[in-house]
Structure formats: structure tokens, C-alpha cells
Image (tube, rainbow, N blue to C red):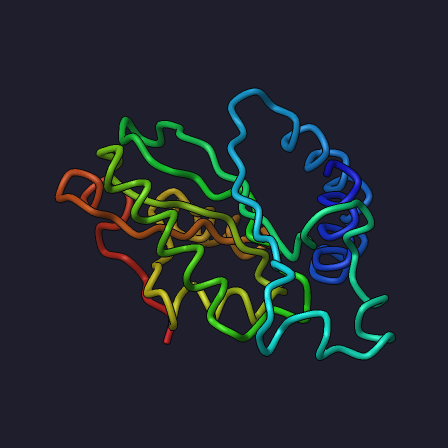
Length: 190
């Protein structure tokens, strides 16, 4: 599974990170094995249906990253329960899907599951970091899911310094205290 995660991360994130990828890849390798890391894996079952193996060509079957036995893994979410600005939050470290399942509502569904996990565990918010260069992801989180740039994002803490940073910290809050500390006077991208 570790090899699969590393491969999917590289396939999806090498371009948005550009020349920073070799350093960032090492950081991500450490993050993925941290004891506080939690995962949800998405598997494609072999049940019949529009996405079943029986309806795919040989080329489509060989064009996936999962090399182990069992139902094919097509993505994952890595998250942690942490505290930001004295607010308990679920922080999404990674949401990675193979290209064959992108754009089909799966990412939205997974984020809704994360939000449900946050609610059920009395967290004040869900937070995540997005590379500015990853315009599809930024649009997905801000427009589709209605996340906003957090007050702790570099562009909000110091706009001059933030302009030099290649990422934004986004959040969706669930209570007033979290809203005041993490979202107050939020910037909504539209």
C-alpha cells in the first residue's frame, strides 16, 4: 500500500509542485507513516456494472497504479485530528484519486465523509492545504465544496509574504468559535 500511495502522489502532485517536488516528496513520505495519520482507501470492486473489469479494454486494465492482489485501489484520503488556533479540526493531508475516477463526484463524496467524521467527533472545522498552481483542486474546494481561505493561510497572515508562498490553507467551519478564529473576514474565491 505504501508503494501505491507514493506512486499516486507522484503522478498527481509532481506537476503542481514543480521544482519543489523532490523536497516535498520526502516530507509526504514522513507524513504518511506518522502514527497520527488516518486513511480511507477507495477500492473498485469487481462487481458487475459500468466500471467493472469486464467492460474495460486490456489497455484500460493495465493503465492503473494498483499492482497488488484484491480489489483495485483507485484513491485515498489521509487525514489527522489536530488542533489549530485552539480549535479541534480534521486536517486533510491528502485527497488523491486516479485519473480514471476523477470528475465523477468521488472526491466530493469523500470530502462529505470527512466533514461527517468531523461533525461526529465534535470538531470545529475541516482544513486542508492546496497548491496555488493546482487550479483544478483550488476550484474544487472553493467553488464546489465552498471552502474558504483561512485566517492562518500565509496570504491572510501577511499578504506580502503570502504572495511568495505557493499554497493556501483552506477551511470549512462548523461552529461560531471556529468561524471567528479560522474564517473571520474570510476570502471566498469565486
